[in-house]
Length: 252
Image (cartoon, rainbow, N blue to C red; front, side, top):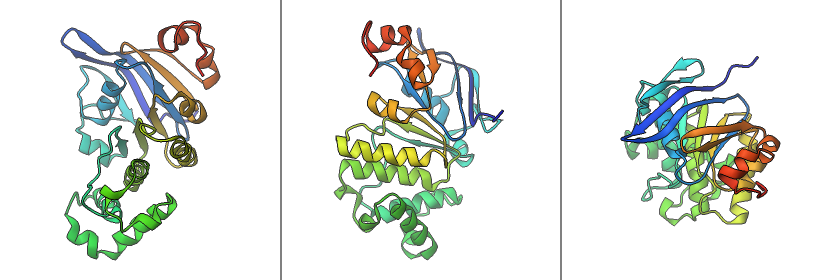
């Protein structure tokens, strides 16, 4: 049996009297996209923030590739191969597309942000950045200032930057947010082509995208996972329809 890339067991997070994550168990397998869905306020972002190291859980364990990481800060988790993209893109808008990607490569190399002198003069950084941009269909935008990009292009760039760190696992937080239909389909195709290279935990409200992409789905309601399974299993689950998709409604 193939071992999970990510193993979460008994994860609990409380905010006063609110139980934001309630004994969450979760596995993400190699070569898969595992979607995490649920209504607003279900605890999805809180869970992702615990996985990324931005929030410390009150109980439970998180393992990445068999190594326990729940006590590590976000920077150490990133160094071990955990990358996150955000619902609101986190880019350097005053710099070029190439410079943003080159900075992400520097982080992977352990140099942190040594600022843009190296980025502008280091031909190896520039060449790798250009290769990654070409793979994502952004080669023609490499010299463009990020603030001039469309929303969809910024989402694509953020994904390129995450991949430039060569992660073992990618946490995707609403990659379809704010995208039009054509941009969403392009993102879906990009993610589908990437999953053999890097497994993903996908938080997404766009159910069409989830059903097109996910190998497995976990449904989070009031901090607790109420169901996990294949797309067909989740579609047919009465508890999911009642708690998340509406009693009697079809999940599609």
